Image (cartoon, rainbow, N blue to C red; front, side, top):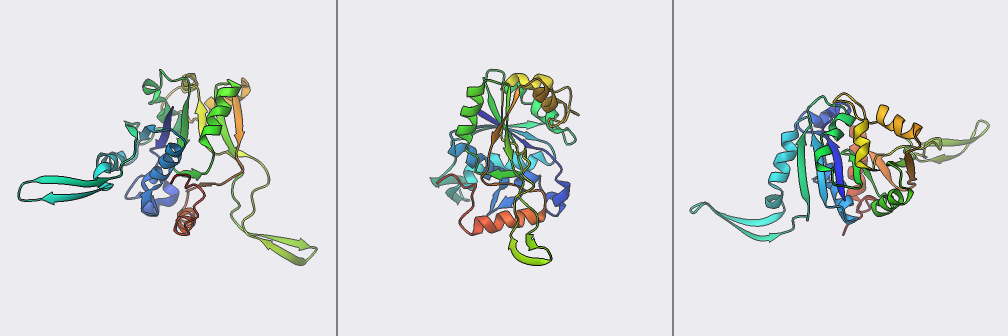
Length: 257
């Protein structure tokens, strides 16, 4: 199965990093967050990717163009202009990079992948700025079992602040960053039938607006509930938290060996 990843947004809320690179290329533990997402899919058997580029898309292209070199031990003989590869650890990935425009909305970017999905029964789809330990194999199996057009992973957003537990005015305890109010939100990590792309009108169509509403109203959208780790990287604060988790050696989204 193929996975489509949106990687073209401007990332204005983390402009400290995105003035130099697209948001999915911001590094966690020395690797782009896009790499972490792809490694997670790959751990579940998904190794063919379609990446929808936009803002500074050339940075993503250059990264994958030189990926083999980045991951290998090499010797350069300048006198003969030769390169010898000693050891390599490249991934078993097939990666297609699409130019989808700097100002295209999420649905418009997705529609650019239509030509590469026409022979698929279903495909995975997610955003290039969120990490999770969602079980992709179980997600795909859930989608194939219910036979509807679309599946969205439903998650509870992480709390932003700690919460006080009080008895009247007496503080009894403190909970560090509890989950939200119990409501589930769109956590990305979709599985879709290719005919879902027919609901996207133009480059200025937001996937989260009309297409998802039509799918829901026609009873063609199912929710795969995920109660494990899920964290978007919207701000520098989020990046710092993800970096700390990776540095601890206990990053929940690291599902690969």
